[in-house]
Image 1 (tube, helix red, strand yellow):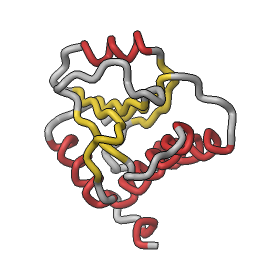
Image 2 (cartoon, one colour):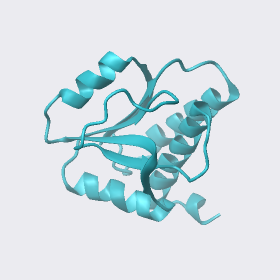
Image 3 (tube, rainbow, N blue to C red):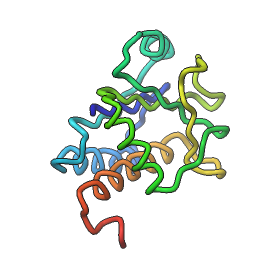
Length: 146
């Protein structure tokens, strides 16, 4: 599964960006996790709307939202594995501006990282860490147990 985190707005150079890049490298190094690639990209509202409107049965879109479903790390992994088993080839996670993603169609699932509010840069770090944790759970790496 190809995983892409799309961030509406700029991704500034920061310690958070460095952490995201570290997790991105780690995830892409883990074999047999089910992730063929893991990327974080800056995106415009137009590009996000285009991705949302594209019809593809092998694509899943998750929108980060404070109203979204909360998952534990193991539940998140189970959800990702379910999508893998349902032949999802492209998974997009959308992080919008502070007021949310420009277009939120009904067919996109909303997920939440926490009931707490995080900055966008910190949200990306948390999301990247959870995908790394997911990859280590799938491959039985001890990282998750610490």
